[in-house]
Amino acid sequence: MRLCPRCGAKTRIDGTLSGDVAKELCDECGYFRGLLAPGWAMGKRVEEARTPSPFTVIDGGGR
Ligand SMILES: [Zn+2]
Image (tube, rainbow, N blue to C red; front, side, top):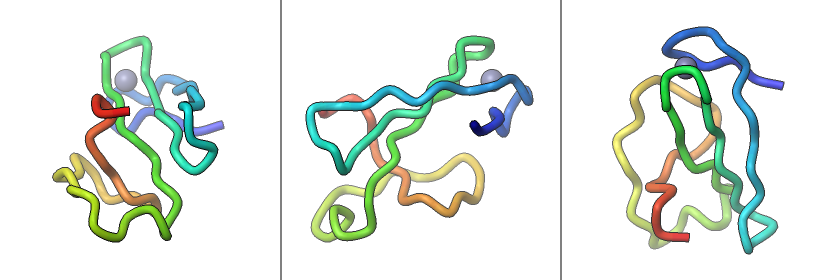
């Protein structure tokens, strides 16, 4: 369980086709980001993070 860094609401995690990638979504304000396992980050386009995160933040739209 994580909280939205923007509005503090609970976010939900959506799995994707890859087990190494998930999307974190906030239904309240529309915030979302991709969560990527560290190994996956290599060679991928890394999007600017809105807030610091322990996760690698990617564009969630591509997968
Ligand atoms: Zn939010």
